[in-house]
Amino acid sequence: MGCCGMKMIRAVIRPEAVDKVADSLEAGGFTALTRIEVFGRGKQKGIRVGEMVYDNLPKTMLMIVVDDAKLTSAVKIIEDSARTGNIGDGKIFVSSVEEAYTIRTGQRGL
Image 1 (cartoon, one colour):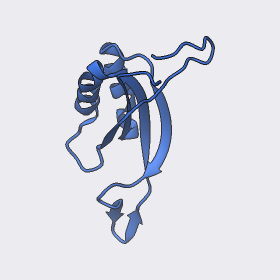
Image 2 (tube, one colour):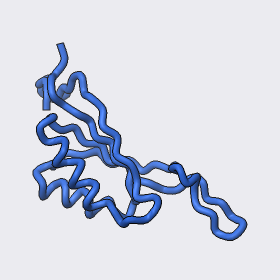
Image 3 (cartoon, helix red, strand yellow):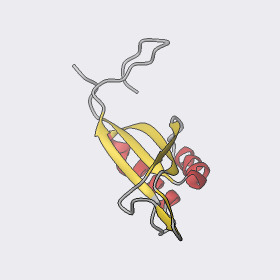
Image 4 (cartoon, one colour):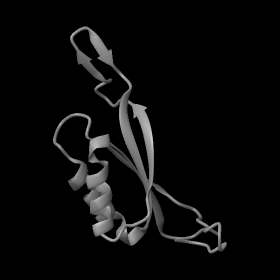
């Protein structure tokens, strides 16, 4: 039997936006997050500068688990604080979380 009503948000954003996004999430009441440095490319297939093509660009992935009721708020905070309006601002992925446990206590859920 899983924990009901939890979503995992994975936001792949520009590295220079991380502090602003993390601060905005914290101000919105979302204090726990995981940060992972990643490399990748989106639909634009990287950046071309003259003859050079940079197809693996540095990005940062933020992972956060929220109650269903707080999903819209968390996604809006990420969008608003990470958006520059330019190609490469990133992507947000949302998936269901079946179960979550705190290792120290064995407590189930968030």
